[in-house]
Length: 283
Image (cartoon, rainbow, N blue to C red):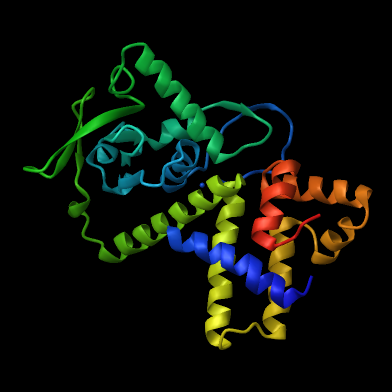
């Protein structure tokens, strides 16, 4: 496997193709039990919803610093999303999302989104079609174009329209961040890897694209050396270790297990899809 061919033909084409189409982080824990994601961001939560739902158009309409309800004394941090799964707007408490408990082998954002959907499904089956009973955790909201506000169906609270934000630079940054997470969510879904890995893949794809634009379509030796370090950071193993795995079944088993744990997927998915399609490697 020649480095230039590997990076340019396989990895680059895959990452850039996915990035142009435009879910999080996993801990090192692997013990099954109860976990939560106390530091998850609103944008990460929505990206994870896209990943578990198999949709890519759920998006944030208002961040926590843009909603009137968040500014009221005693209220939690609220954000408003367009929920593509149900084709409706929803207001969600970030405090609630961060408190959701789920059972898994490690702390991860996809599990938060999955458990949120499970709780939501139970609420719907219980006849609560617009969120929890009083809209204390999440609720469906209606957008009133005449006033520019979202109104909670259960709570009656008003959530200001995004047009109310005057910080243009902040809005631009948030939109760019949302676009990045949307790309990462798609990569995560397509290759069944953690959002942390998919975000690294999208970042790496952008980095390679910039290198090629500065090098007339070719990667320099310094570029290749830098990317090898990035690849090892992404997979947890070196190219040499992957090459050795192709000739030794015991090494192969150990390498697959190590990489699978690092990127948040199964050894089977790693061998049959991720390595062949992303890196052009067949073991």
